[in-house]
Image (cartoon, rainbow, N blue to C red; front, side, top):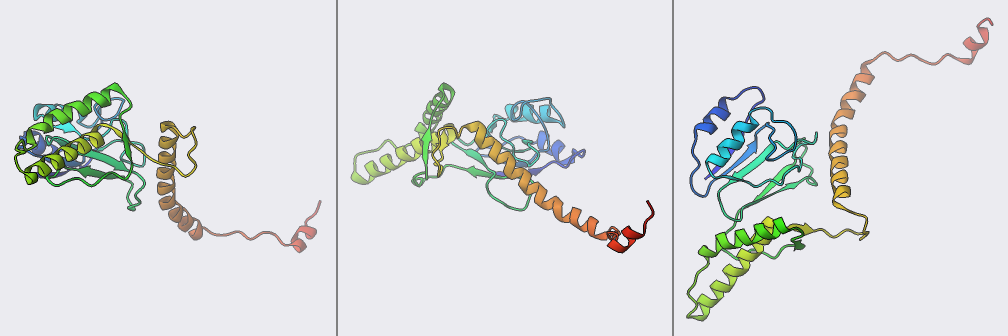
Length: 234
């Protein structure tokens, strides 16, 4: 089941319905929650964020978003995705220009077919990422067919194993993105700064036409001519 959710600021009718609803098996809940909680963004809790976090824990729904990765041009993480589907993953695609002040949240759900190879390498840098990878593999191992008596069954087993390892790596690790310059100084901090700059450019491009229109409607004062300047007394 896929649930698309939107919480209008200062209006909790939709949120009250969601908090009374119990998640089903293989469920995905995603949308604009307009709320703050330390589970997805550092800082103070606002706009029913604590209620949403407790609801997700009570329904055993995992947050697919990476913590402290903005989904809005103003640096806020308000577009969220929760799911109880093993190996489900969500990535903020801030490079996609959709004309909105919200960034695209790309959600990947595991399928039965062989997953296509990733366009870039996946790296597990920290112990937490490696632990998460192991947990995902253990959770998905039960869905791998165990029969290997025939060549077709052996192919199915190999395909399911490759698919499981690939999905677990993409969900737990981070893609190694190639850059044209290949400079060693291009760190994660630089990547975040670049994303913030692109977000600022996106917002400023929408504000400039309005500013230009307001300036066009204002009365224009012409510069004094040389003759009038010469005629003025000392």
